[in-house]
Amino acid sequence: MKLDSNIVLSALDLAAVREGGTVTESFTNTVKLAQAAEAWGYRRFWLAEHHNMPGIASAATSVLIGHVAGATNTIRVGSGGVMLPNHSPLVIAEQFGTLEALYPGRIDLGLGRAAGCDTFTAQLLNRNPSAGDQFPEQLEMLRHLLGPVAPNQRVQAVPGGNINVPIWLLGSSTFSAHLAATLGLPFAFAGQFAPQMMLEAIQLYREYFTPSAALSQPYVMVGLPVLAADSDEHAEHLATAARQRILRLIRGQPIFTPPPVASMDSLWNAAEQRAVETHLGAAVIGGPKTVERKLREFRELTQADELILHSDFYRVEDRLHSYEIVADLFLRPAR
Image (cartoon, rainbow, N blue to C red; front, side, top):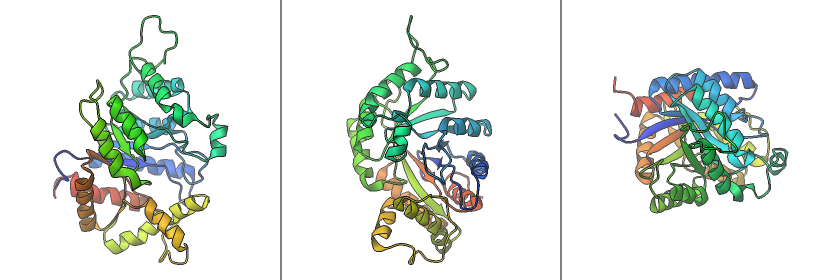
């Protein structure tokens, strides 16, 4: 049974470190997940840039993309995303030009304009306080460096020039949606952590989309938390790990993934509970029948061309099982 003939499913990973675990273990789990996602028919596997967040190990995003691409064969691997204002466009062009040369036809470059960290850490990255406002100009320079090399071009990305790395714009508001539309680029909305403006951003993107050499018609991907298990009750229990993690993020605490708990009642106050539930406002949590119904409803609501799923669990076995449940429902033939 398929979600429909056009929908594509992908996987988003943050190289999460569990409580009591190690970064090396998290990288091993990331590779396990990417290899399984490839076998189950997921289209792409993306990693996200974050800094100064104990519990998330994907800060050196391009390095980890290369590691995952080298451990897989066909699945597309990319960034969901690289926070461009943290970097020189030349460096990103060189990094992703190198990745595309190593793994031709398998690399995606998803770009965001946020810092992916706190203000002090952004300063250590030499990020200008107004860097987000300069995102369109940085994007133009990056696209130039990844495009055809002109005769006597003074600065080239080597490798990078003349290399066709697909560029996506990522966002949780209407800014990047509008920019992606006017440039004719694919757009990915971060529904996995900030679903509030999702429908508005998607509508704006489709309304203002201008065909380009990169894309002839709008293409929308939506990030979505999916926590699937063998029953609704077990899924709700396992989801307390993700809820605790977001609670710690809200409190400014390290966000190592904790084990699930019997109840969240004693762990948060009413305001914190509302904040966590807002963060997970689009989450699909449940057993197979519930997950199937909710994914179909979400697809109907958004008309997304692609969903990129984020499954946040304490045990890697539960993460793998969640993606496998979705694959059994929508990607693999009935057995």
